[in-house]
Image (cartoon, rainbow, N blue to C red; front, side, top):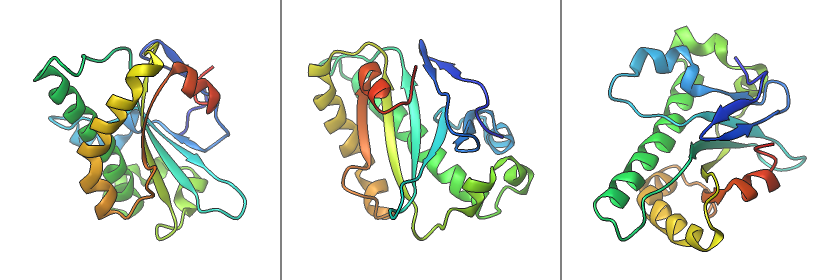
Length: 175
C-alpha cells in the first residue's frame, strides 16, 4: 500500500511522493482493526539520504487550531495531536515487528527493509494557512507533550515540528 495518488487532507494536497515511500496508515488494515477509540495520523513518509539513517515522517494535517489562550480547547487539541502522532509511529512499528500480520503485506519493500535500530522519526503537524508567528508556540506545546515519546525512543532533538502549508511546500510535502 502506498500513496499512488496525491492525498487531500485539511485543504492540502499531499504528494506526489517517490514510489513506495509513502504509507497511508489511516487507511491500513491494522488501523481498521484497532480503529475504535484510537486516533491516528494521516500518513508516514520514508525519507532517505545517502550516508544518513532513514527518517520516517509521521504526518498529521489540520486546517485550523484553537488559540493557546482558549484552555482547555488548546490543551485538548495538543493532546489529540500527540496521540495521533505517537499512535501512528507505534502502529507502524507494531506492523513492522509482525504484531499485525494482516497488515504486513501493505508495507512496501522500502518500509520493510528499514533497519529498526537505525531509523529516526519526525513527528510533524502541518496546519493549512497558519500564520508563521503562531508556529513557535504550537511547536513548543507539541514538543513538550511529545517529550516522553522522544526520550523513550531516543529520537533526534528536532523530532517534533509544527509547520504551515508554506513550510510543507518547502519540504515537498504538498503541491
